[in-house]
Length: 431
Image 1: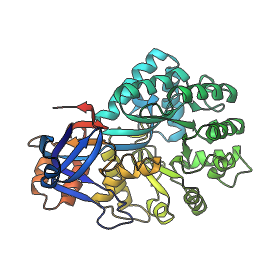
Image 2: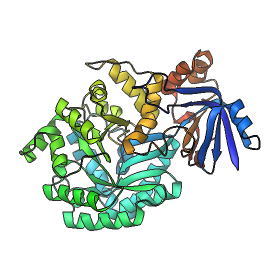
Image 3: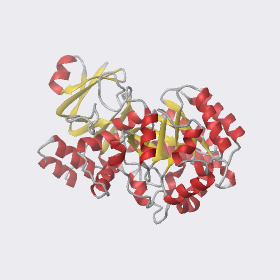
Image 4: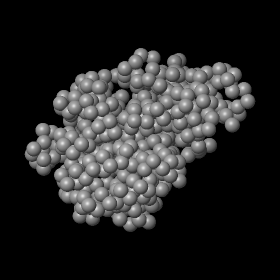
């Protein structure tokens, strides 16, 4: 059975940083969905003519966008959101690590996993690259919750063997065994994929990083993620721990961890050499603007990343960030880049791209999701602003599609999100 959703539709099938007129904006659009995939996305008249027997849901008054894609977030940290006033290393010691240690209790971890997955869905995030837990059963709980909900999740056991609380440490041998078991159980099952995740170079010895490389070599299709160049004190400590390394990136390069399947979070303090090498490897960076500001890490050099051809996705970095809202992250990119040392002004098309297709490109799934090209998974968010709200007033006076989209990214919050679907299946609904 084919279903047509009728509403205003926005998506970016091309990269608006590289191509003019990449935004597709349909004031009266039709999205035809068949067997969980996009059959056609065009103006409503054309879609209804192509599928005259389809059922139609009239959602006019609202807006359909591709599902949001979060390329960096931490599931154990949902309950420490709002911890302001710290820099990175103090925040880890006083807030993040004590909470992550609590996930040794599998019952507690299971509760947190469902809270986290439900929060992603309620904020319109249909795909996420997620730091799991340092504990195997807690990481299993995340995968199980994601599988039950139907989200597309890439995650894995978080690996550390030094400089954290001892309860969060594993030996490289034990980490290898548990990682292999999780890969067997979850990788490639439904919408799940496994990711190799050393927390960061500070907490991973050379033996642990070597083990990470072995995991990547032994199983096809794994992803890799970690942190890099987030905070100046962190960077100095990495240089002390790895005196042989040219820079932070060189630590990961030595162990074969940087490639097309790699997403490195933050990279606020990046040298030109790092940027050139990242581009050469085909690796991606997860830009986390709210977290970078909240932890005082710095302003991301977006223009330099783009100039060097580094692929960029957006991340909320829960809980160093300020919540699950990917539209808020795009707005923060806009605001911070306006006042950056080398400023640039983002268009509304670029803001949409960063929250959607850019993340799919970073994760290597742009052939699956990220926009409404025919054949892709029908991953979508339906937004309808509250009546008599400031947002609804701004939308009424908008004269162009770009103005409407800009108003949505400026003011739409989770209260505007009415439906979220993954592969056509409802994962969140709010009348």
